[in-house]
Length: 112
Image 1 (cartoon, rainbow, N blue to C red):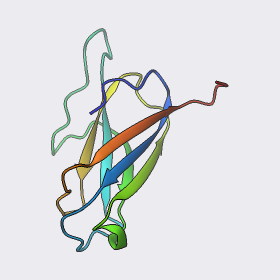
Image 2: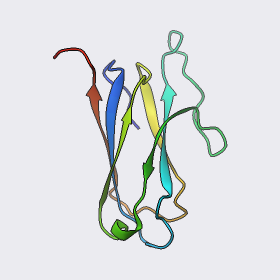
Image 3: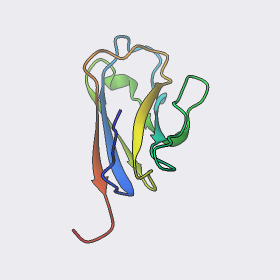
């Protein structure tokens, strides 16, 4: 969960993940979702649940051959909320091992 995207409209998300079991994860995904914050003053979007996901950002596509080692998966996203919390939804059907990380690098087309 990240509380602020630094007001950048675009970002590169990198998920480092590993699985306990390597069975049947090829081309399955882990979804990335955002919960916009401070939409109207301090009012936020609803917190995601297993049946309500809020704003879809992208999917990390899994590779079976690398399942027992660290996988570094990337999603490039545009039009992100100015402030948001980010959530992962594991649709692989397999358990993710402890120690996973989600890192984000803000991006913009403006000159730095």
